[in-house]
Length: 268
Ligand code: LIP
Image (tube, rainbow, N blue to C red; front, side, top):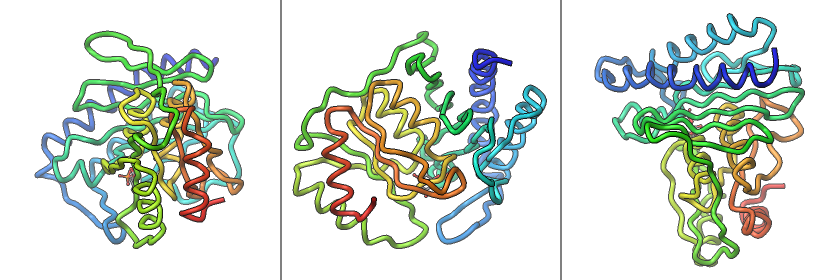
């Protein structure tokens, strides 16, 4: 089974998983919401979408490993072939009826993010990439090649700053203050993978979050790389199972943004 086989499979699976999640979204009033921790929500929808994706991958590629948000206990090292899945990224948005959430699926081979697909069902779009093959948006209008913005200076740029509502993190106050000092506009739309896809699409100049899991970030980071953008090393040396900082941006502002985050938010 080649990378192309897996890419074709992914381009078929992503919109079907998105449609399954969209059906739950339309009937979200029926969902029982559970708390995994402070501001950390989950429902039957997250679990059912993940199970559907996991079953399809296990049938098509029985030897491949699987790391999904709702079933991830621990992952030792980096399996040779592993699929990394966030069944509903932006779960809080999803449960509150905010139309900004997605289904994120990445494929990592020998530690290298190789394939990625982010389905935004509410917009009828799938963002996808194959390493070396560019980043694309597929929707009713057809296929569009993606490119990050041509921003070259921080002043005047628009940076999305994701942060978890699950624990207070004062580093974000210092980061936002530094961004303001550099005349940078910032937003947080509440789900990492879709904000990364929209950086690849050139809607925003950058995305920063100080701690993210692999399932939130891997597919989106490949999209930004294949759209000609800058991506800071991710995950960290501890591997796929450990949360790490994410910085992804237009190539022209990557190094200066990384320096700013390093100096003001204390990341390596
Ligand atoms: C969320 C991310 C968001 C982050 C949250 C959470 P989930 O993913 O999209 O950027 O701030 O802590 O990780 O839980 O909705 O899949």
